[in-house]
Image (cartoon, rainbow, N blue to C red; front, side):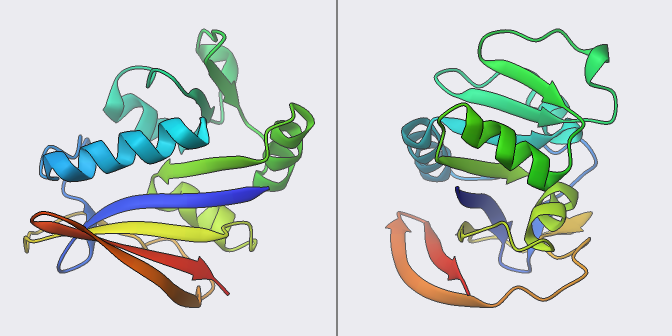
Length: 166
């Protein structure tokens, strides 16, 4: 399965500015890019904290939420909760006939997948701001992630750097 991690970052590397960051600090253009990419891919994977900070199911996509307590939540056709390992979750999603997904957060969930070599590419929007924050993309990583730049997309005030994971 092709797994695409998608994040927004400040110039100084922060991906979350507070414990309940709702990314109000990102540009309209980044939000549009995020929606277009994740909707075209069709499946998004996130951790419980990311799901709770969003506060709702993102429409037009299968929302897969990793949590230690999946029975505490009510599922629907477009929202499922799992306590699986990253490998088991990928296997289950592939069994549904899905061959790609976007990993949308947070840093701990990213690390769980990246440390196991399951992330194939990263799209990171660099927002033109320097801010204090609570989390950067590598906060929970145990292993380095080597990248090869595939391209850069201009989003008005922001840029998206697209990397293949080596």
